[in-house]
Length: 242
Length: 324
Image 1 (cartoon, rainbow over the protein chains, first blue to last red):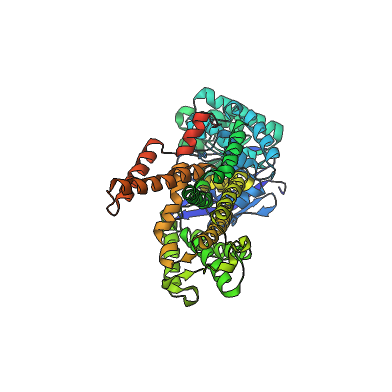
Image 2 (image 1 turned 90 degrees about the vertical axis):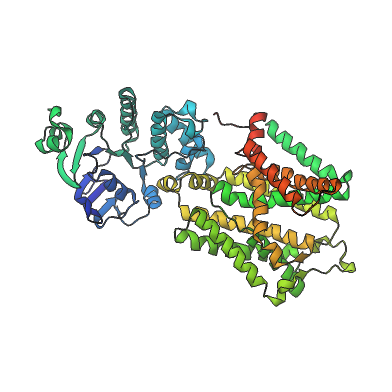
């Protein structure tokens, strides 16, 4: 499949003796919503950070949009079209919501007016427009999570990497976020790669799921196949999922 | 919009001030403008980009010595010499920045490095005989040059308007930079460099540009200093106390704000002058008395308005666009 937007090939990462990610390969097609799930310590965030360029992989190759990116800096990868969020949200606290998103929007549009237009459009998509003049430090957690997505989206990415954006949200907030992400994927066609623990969100969003355990792949496929996989149930979902 | 009217009125008042102010008030205002100007330059580094430089006297000193040296030894006037001063200071600034940020020296370690650079430059200048070494460099006052504004020879009014123009220019530049793409990148780096990087900001480049602009701007202040005071001693211009002195106005006025350095300078310089006058008049002028009261006043201001005087005023006047 040469049309994949993101191709991860035999990527490994070791921290001292611990193999955090063990020869993982997968492909994400343009426009797809792809989920990576697995128990804590499965290597999801490590994998994610290697794609975003924050940590270097020991072995393997990562291709994005036809270019090798496994040795590139995070800002170059962002420039190529990968937007990311952080598991523990990192808003710019002393800036307004609008200015937070402006930083992202200015990656591609060098004119303030154009960037402000993008910013306002993104803030409307994420239900943050009315709070655009609030300081980011005053936002509630669900708002911060959406700000994190808004900021990444303002860079106009081809691939959006979402690191547990549902964590800590109440079910109603989760459904709201799922709705927003679906809408964004549908209207702008942005490809989404998400790491998620909240199965309710994964099942509602993902077209394919990769399951990691101790850094290795134990299953990959469509959501309803993966959740019935015995290996996935014993290592992650637990017997009650049956 | 009424903010702009207020600024225009303030500027007009300052332009008109020499018509009715005496020499003493003019000399205090020149100091105010000087500190507001170098405060603007330093604020780009710390207030906007979050990089604490405690060695900005280095760029004041380099600017001062380069322009004074060119004038004394090559007859090159300050209006040309200022470009050489900017170039030298920016080059030294970029070496400092490159050495620290390329090798991951951040925060307090970066601050220590800026002090080190200023200190060893001071020691170096103590031994440059061509520039007067430790004995000092003096710009002679020749009668035939009197009134040659193009050589920065003139009365207090020349320096008053020059300093006012520097502050006004710097403030406009800073206000413009803050609302530019670069300005957004700077504050993003200040707030969270990791998150900035994820949004495509080249953090190293953003910091280096801040350093270049800040050191170059500060050097212009140094040229002003040299031709206003007409004497330079390495132990005075490069001294760490000088670096601290020039960061107080932006801190008191409001870090990372466009008007903070101006407000801070308008508070601190007259405060210092008033304390000198008060201690002299009271007869209670033991060494250090002024410093004790000055320090107490600083503590009080920072305790009362921790984020600076300007943000506090801006809120009172309804200029603040943020909702808390």
